[in-house]
Image 1: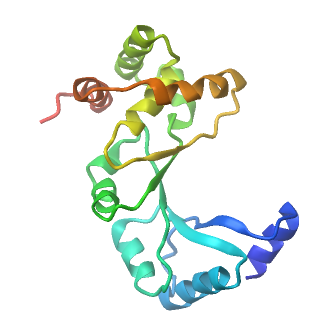
Image 2: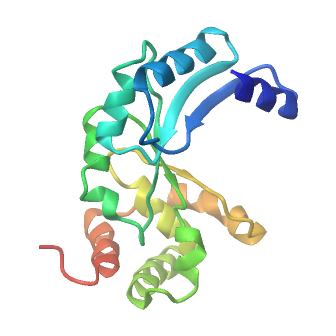
Length: 190
């Protein structure tokens, strides 16, 4: 409660729309944490709570001790950080119709520094064809997934920010999505 009050005072607002628990804590008492999160919602100071970087079992543990429903899980997800598509994270939230927020959807800028030439080439080919920036294609790749991923953009590049809305106009078909995914994997999808 003190942390919420401090944040409200710093921002000069009367409520927080979404409060995220940043990482799972190995020492978390889920009953204590769940009760505290329910309390900040009941106080009206927080509208909803979610988590960040929780695995499905961490999510279920905390949710089991809460009256309110967790709103989201913010996980690392991008063309270069695609492990959540196969480790059960995306499937868990898709099955439960829980919105996922993708942090670092542009891989911390690593999509643009030549870290993976195959991915850069795949993104660039589609970007040229559609007349958009490669960052828009990288975000469109996440938006194309049926789980309705919500990318959280953190770039400070003003020209990139101005072009990111183009991602909403880029519709990738299944073949294009897999061309990018295959490039990211570095081998054919089995």
